[in-house]
Length: 173
Image 1 (cartoon, rainbow, N blue to C red):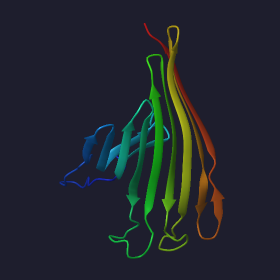
Image 2 (image 1 turned 180 degrees about the horizontal axis):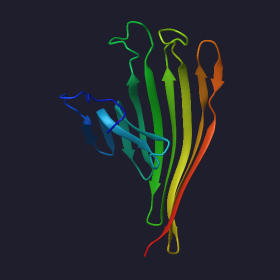
Image 3 (image 1 turned 90 degrees about the horizontal axis):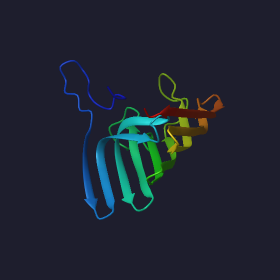
Image 4 (image 1 turned 180 degrees about the vertical axis):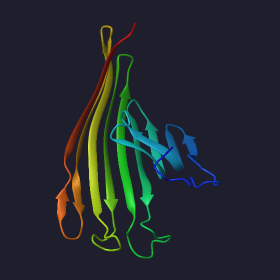
């Protein structure tokens, strides 16, 4: 159903999304439990408690912050132990094509190697581009994602590196 941001205990209430969206001129502010997807939602596809700003100009700018986890704490008195996501997306759409480019990152303030089981501090990031266009009767939708960052177990640091390419080409009948 989603990534576990809501309560899906048997007999409990499952809230998939609950947010407030306020539009004033070209700016929309969205706060609450909301869907977050970048590009085709291949690399980044989640439901989190977030604050997002959408600025509608010829290039639509979406920037935001999501609270992913409090790392077992109900308060921030223990310091910066939270896992947070930050993202920005630039999108442009015309009659013949559309394109999106984005950057997303995760910060993890928990000290690596602490807790039981030992915590792994993951500081990951993704930069991507996605476009849709037609070449004659062929419709093309493609996305390229490049991942980076590092995971720190307290005993070792592991580099996170990856590249992902997605393409869909079809002919309208």
